[in-house]
Length: 103
Image (cartoon, rainbow, N blue to C red; front, side):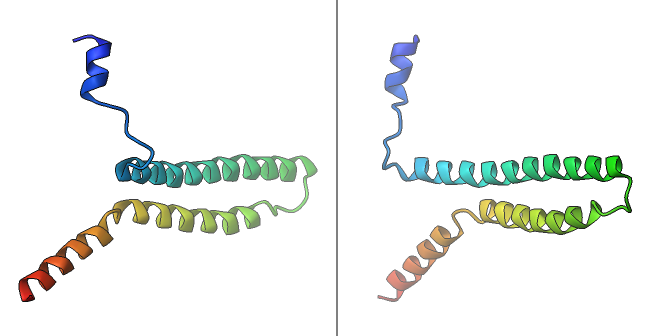
């Protein structure tokens, strides 16, 4: 099978495809968290380096702790959303089935 025939077997998803929208949302959630984690790491390394260069009392752990807490919450929310993906759809399907059996 060459590339031309395989593209006919698996056509590109349309823009309105719900699976494509779901995949894009999931990728956006993950990307947002990883960008946040990268910025957190780079900024806190810079603050630590600045604190060490100045030689003053240690203060860089304060923003590290506060921002780290916020990053942890961001991670929990992100990955709970990804784990619970489709949960509403399953509830809706079960509720529809229950209502249809009562009718």
